[in-house]
Image 1: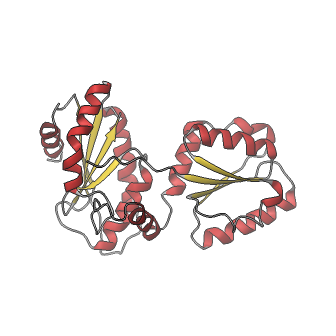
Image 2: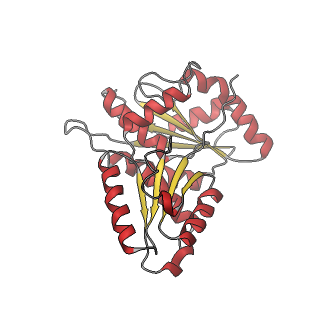
Image 3: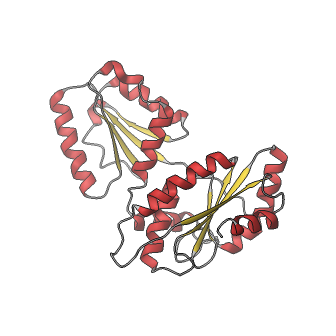
Length: 269
């Protein structure tokens, strides 16, 4: 059985105010992100020199006005080229601590969901290259891999006295969709869930999400957010994704893999 560690999202932080740079970096690290920080002298010159990062976070609060204008213009250029960027700004430097963890994490998630679908899936294929555990079309985990590890996930939840929830997401009302639609949905789901969550190509028309340490109420909120994100996808006019999501939680709706899978499939009816 393969034991895969969740990957870390790397954020490149640029801020025109030293105070903001310190505070935002601390918040990002507290949320579990890996943070790369550029100092004042590096604001522009070294952004291109930084290797891999998942999101550029730019804070324009405080600092020199000309510096902010220059940085904003450069960031606009990066965004036009497809770089995922989150802009943070406030009129008052004293507001340096106004970004709550929840608000910041939500905005980061929204920014990451704007990444190019092809890039997201390509990065994932490289990450798991040679392990033969991904569905080739969607880059989600394969049903075979899920079936192999699901009993262990149930046992872990039982041992830790934690809930575990399954979301069964029907993106096509039972009918397969073109590959580019699947890829757009896969990228949206992958960037819209936690790194500890697992996404599986359940069958030709459905995706299964396994959410560890997640109770039913939170899972419903997650399902609603995912549904809205998928419905907002810009696909061909001929493609209309009609989403239906079933929910089942351990141990509330079943205490075995078979019981939970049966319950979540019946929840689709």
